Length: 432
Image 1 (cartoon, helix red, strand yellow):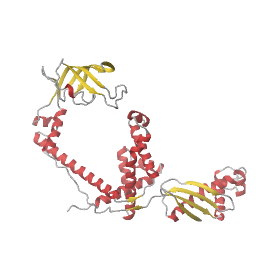
Image 2 (image 1 turned 180 degrees about the horizontal axis):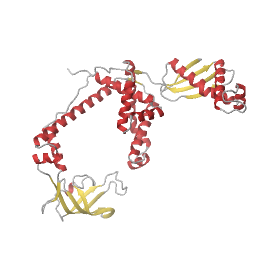
Image 3 (image 1 turned 90 degrees about the horizontal axis):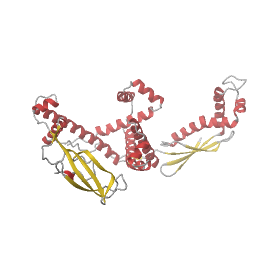
């Protein structure tokens, strides 16, 4: 077998593979035996028809193509990749030049190869762990949030004016250029001041108004307002407050602590809140440090990524998004319509993240080679067990699905990258 390699742009290579005629003939013999076991030929038991009969029954071209597709092409292509040390990242595109009995087989295969990865520093990286200091204000904010969930809505006292956070009902009618417009009128409409559910600036102008008081609210519709006729237009809303309810918070004391927690005193509740906040701050800092270490190792890596690898990752990201949407009962097409976008825009938005993710994966794979990091059976078993727990299935069920979908290689690659990421994290430079 002879192989010549032609390098193209963006890591694309074309292999011209030549297989000697004698090896082609042997492959044809094997194809005849294989086909005689698969095809019913009158007068012969399966596997017993001689080559001449098989070729006469099926046609020489059929046998020759079978020999190429199931024997010659896959074997010679695999050996060519091995001999030339090429790791493809795309499916091969095959072009047959010569395929005839008694002649050398010549065919070309074009693939995109895995790019060369030049590692930079990935061990002893100096990455600070910044743990947020929990203050009394942080604790008090959590206590206030607990109290807020126990609050009640009560009628505001007579003569009270609207203030931020109040719940109101109001009548309103909108005018543009002195003319009332469709959809701009409401009666006893419920509105929480500060919820920002109305046009920007609308709610702020109601602060200070009293029940029964009429007030003109002047606003400008946003340029991207969904109603095209109103977009960018100045409007006046004539409003009348009909009711005001305010939030009544419980007193923050030991009684509140007993009501909202297992603790008998406010001090005990605060101590528990502080402990939880500090533990969360530590976890957050650790996660940020881990991600910074991986990002740093990625930034230190030099690699010319073929565009097709980025395109494929973008496609995978969109497929994952579609699956998440479907789990929520929404089709991708519906989401695009609601969001006012299209696939082309989504692909463009995802491209930068996809490129970074591909570069990170390439870095991790190269570090794994450099450090001889391997995936053991115990690693795969642990991963399968974790997936089973997440999906409420048994490890045996998950393993069966992975085998049936031929995803063992993907699973092993994922575990290898995770182990390698942990190696980088474990080798962060110790703080001095």
